[in-house]
Length: 127
Image 1 (tube, rainbow, N blue to C red):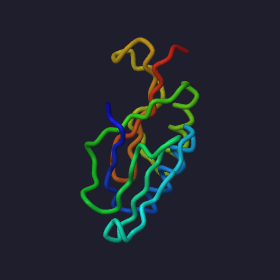
Image 2 (image 1 turned 90 degrees about the vertical axis):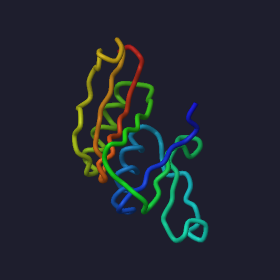
Image 3 (image 1 turned 120 degrees about the horizontal axis):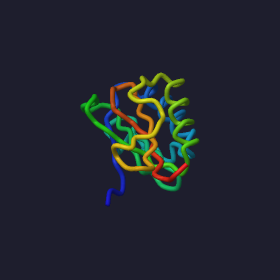
Image 4 (image 1 turned 180 degrees about the vertical axis):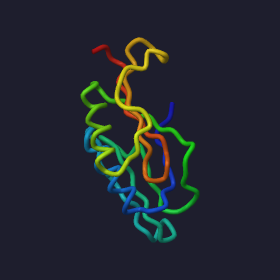
């Protein structure tokens, strides 16, 4: 149902470095930037695997309380996402592991990004 989503970030360079590392671990990357003449001078970029699905927008109202989960194909990708995100300055919000309270095969990891957004990698497949 959702085609794409985006968040505001307070520090473009810091957030870009975080998402570059975290998304590389799950096969995604910055696919597009919007020329500043169309954004009022703000940095805007879209990440994805084949098309921009998750957008960063410099400025606006960044902050905690938002949650974004990214589906991956294996538990190893969840682990890699968590490790890369933590190494890139993320803060732990739930180490990789099973979450049977959601469903039998739910395996996820949660990290807070530089602005406090709760980002997650999740695999729904059995081990």
